[in-house]
Amino acid sequence: MAGLRAASGAVIVVMDDDLQHAPEDIGKLHAKIVAGYDLCYATFRQLQHALWKTAGSAFRDLTVRALLGVPRGIRISSFKAMSADIAREITRYEGPFPYVDGLALVLTRNVANVELEHHPRLDGRGHYSLRQSVSLWAKVAMNFSVVPLRVASWLGLGFAALGFLFAVYLIVQQLLFQRIPVPGWASLVIAILIVGGVQLLALGAIGEYLGRAYLHMTAKPQYVVKSRKGFGSTPGQP
Image 1: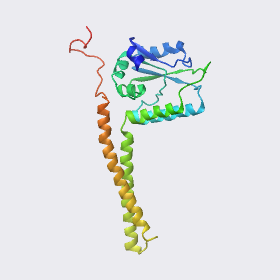
Image 2 (image 1 turned 180 degrees about the horizontal axis):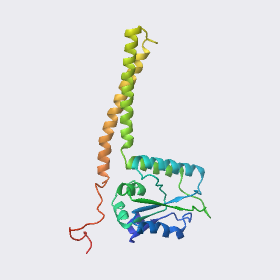
Image 3 (image 1 turned 30 degrees about the vertical axis):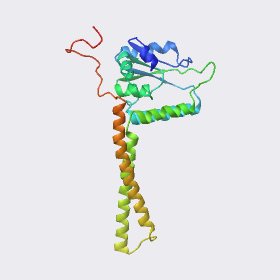
């Protein structure tokens, strides 16, 4: 975030500092932005990472795709280029847990990929630990979406419905066949399913309100203005 705020170019490039991202590939990302895309990610034929880190990246991509609505066929990575407009909007975020890709994908769906080579590390070792990877996933899951809260609501509704259906089934069994498998067990299970489901549903509703308040506090933009015509000059510019 500090780098994005300090950058002044028309196209901003973000890359790792260990030369696994080749500087000579910057032009390929830059060309996509010049062609009209707002954001361009490098996608790699084969990642030169440890197996756990590669698996973690794949899981993060699935989470981002589910929660942020990444355009179909687009893969994200830490090697990317973006227009100055997108960088400027990203740096408006002042919350304590920034996730640059999440902020960028909230702003635009005009995204491209460029396939590049991922080079092996020539010296030293990575310092991005498993703990930091889990923290990054938490930012993706919690900071930019209320989907987890909605999942809790739907689970609660599902369990409550299952309890009601089970109750109807047992009532029919008793009325028509006078047969209950284990006395007392059925009523206990039904009570747990219905009460537990209603509790989850209520917690999900509360979480929905809290989630919306959270998104409001983190200043999620209602819209992004890329250019203006007929309203005078852009504020701060001649």
